[in-house]
Image (cartoon, rainbow, N blue to C red):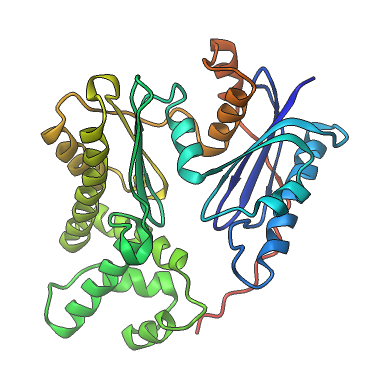
Length: 331
């Protein structure tokens, strides 16, 4: 049996899925983060997340560990090839970014445009002629407009403007205090500037913004519209560079897509205003299945048969091997 691995290495966890060349999902495991390789102990953490993920996937499949034909990894941030080679027993490694596997999962035939709206924001498209173009993804200092971190920062600024009397009152004030477990805005400021506060924690406050918008808060609705227009700008930049007649499908993936109509409707309007033929469609699969799709392409499978698509569509049960998270300090 020819075996492949699809690995989605993220900021909070790593997902590893074992499959065969027919796309049948055999076993899966979720381990800790594998992308923080520039931190103290980061390479050891990456090795453990990948190595333990493979062992867990084989165990979940009821199989003894063995060499696989291809391992395709999509890493948020970066991957250290020597560490990856030490952690995985594989004939071939395809080391890619999270955008690559996210795109392949969302659009399995690899013709269309996808925007990832997670902590950051990046868009990628490919037309039927094979031309690829990418916009965004420049990080929180140089870009990432429309991503969760960018939205979270603007929500914080709106709350402090309201407190100062420089802006309208907003439901975001109690929502963000609850999100950060702060007693008041001065306490919140103290928490925000602690070295332990991460961009991912700020990005997670996008959930509070979406909930406030759903409750009718005008400030939260305005912030989501601002994010939507920034994401549409990324997509329009991709479509401007491609043969749009051959890349009409537009997919949004990432946590921010769950914000619903207050984000998706202005996003779709802004894309169609410049590219009327564009169609906003839901993603077909998730990123880890995208890694499996790209692993199959490494084996020479250019087009997925209906049977392979059906196999990939089946639910995944993950063995959870993540390390215990330390208890949060509320302040």
